[in-house]
Image (tube, rainbow, N blue to C red; front, side):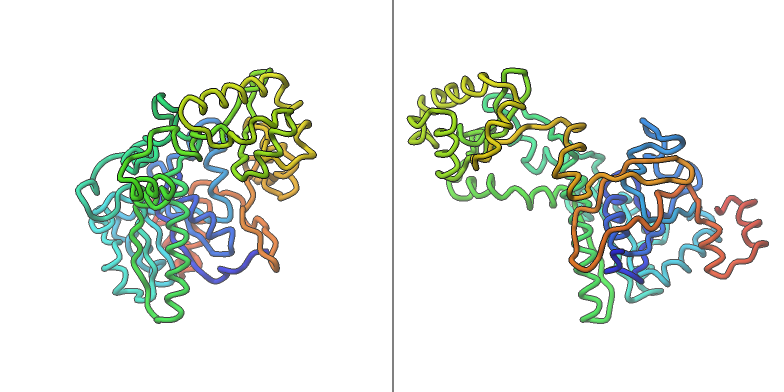
Length: 392
């Protein structure tokens, strides 16, 4: 079992995708995560479709290894309960709009007075300052502002929405996890907590390395689909096959491009790895015609014995069944006491001395409320009163 974060207590006030994915990564590494949900609807993603039985399969994919507590922070006793939890917590993760945590009196300056060692992470679209901080937005808006959407798509074509929520997951979840882990290390050295302000737009901007490199080096914005890693070179592109499926060709190094050209019987194209002008279109058309000669699976077999960085473009159901996916344990089944047998995506980081295990299945709404309250010292009469007053 991975217990690198064993003993670390996290209060997760977030919902939807960015925050819950971040806290699940922390939980997978051994942290104790308590998912604080309101008493009205909880995390909205529970009720999305498709559903396993009661919860959505989407919710079940990003909330394992957590406990769930229903708590009304607007009730005085609910606030008191939260403060007791915060005093014992190592990390608080919240995803409110700027100013909301302050109105609820659960902001960092307030809680820091109760717990100086507290690490507090605010995860938002645009961050805690700047002219956009109060704007309503979603992933498509963040990647639009960050320039990613404008760079994604075919040459002379419109922008294309990426297949995953890049800002939510890479710009948000991963950046927040990285910040929290760094703050935990820093706390051991300095003895005090830290405030972390994560902006999903900032996160995406930090990933725009190649495009920014071209911009800063030439003072010109690269055209959509024009850079050598976005379809600007015939040696690095996606090609349709005879059966209407696709192959991904990533022959960036001369040796791989040479291997490709020799394997398909076109040694004359070796000199045209990065053609310019009209020749670029001529070479691309030649490669397109080559790939039209076989089905995707035939091409996969054809290149299985040659290093040419030429591989199939799998559909999602095929990726799940892929031999590499299985060998790495990236998809597994989990028995859930209420939802039955559910599918899970494996933890992506492998540690030499620890093996990933699921300690807790994704929680039902408020499943652990009473357990947590008892641990805080509340008695059955308190719990009855809390229920009657809708504190829990």
